[in-house]
Amino acid sequence: MKHVTQKQTGFTLVEIAIVLVIIGLLIGGVLKGQALIENGTVKSLANEMRSISTMVNGYRDLYRAIPGDDPKADTNQKGAVKSTTNGGNGSIDSGTWVGADAVAATNETTLFWQHVRLAGLASGSAASGTATNAVGGKLGVTSNADRPKTPDGISASYYVCSSAIPGKTARALDIMLDDGVSDKGQFFGALEGTSPVTTTNAANAAEYVDANKYTVCLAQ
Image (cartoon, rainbow, N blue to C red; front, side, top):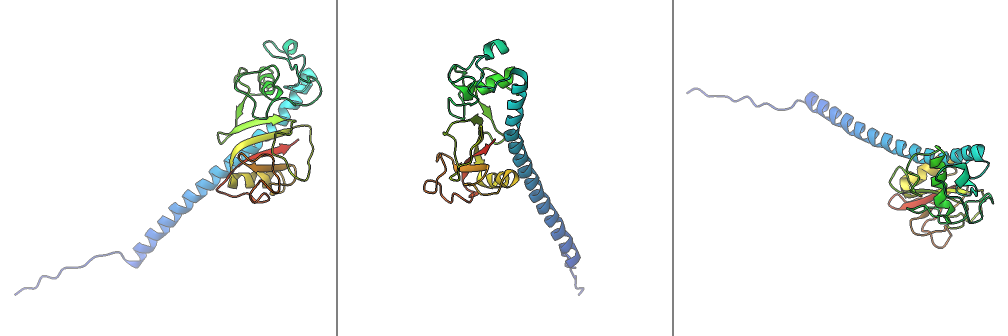
């Protein structure tokens, strides 16, 4: 009788090694892509916050006033609403930093966006008194105490604030713009819904937690 022998085939060690290398490269590529996306988001958020200073200085050069605080905005720009609350005092000191959906004559934080948009210093509709950041949160500016604030008492002419920032991103922003500590320095933050920052109302105030979201502010 003839015996039929079947040749068993399988992966060699070399083939398995090649497959593992390919899988490793794919995983590394995905992780690298995620890191690039995260870095891009951090840079976008930082540039948004820095751009407020450019808008303020540009408006000053054009009209000798601060946007939002301009008491002559209606004559300086066609269609603009002038500030009627402490207009011309050098502060954006009425309204909350997030602004409002509709332009209000008594809300300087809302008028800020109308003024810079009508002046061609920012994109967006002048009918809206709000702005959105790179992660879908709010971007705004204020001289008021409604912002998150640091216990070490940093003072500035105004504060640029940005909300809905994931903890990991907030930490990277703080490192890029300041000292990496959420309750000290020029850049600081608070857990969403816990403003201002104090040693009692912010969990782990000095350290950003990845799972949380923060409102962060930059003193300028």
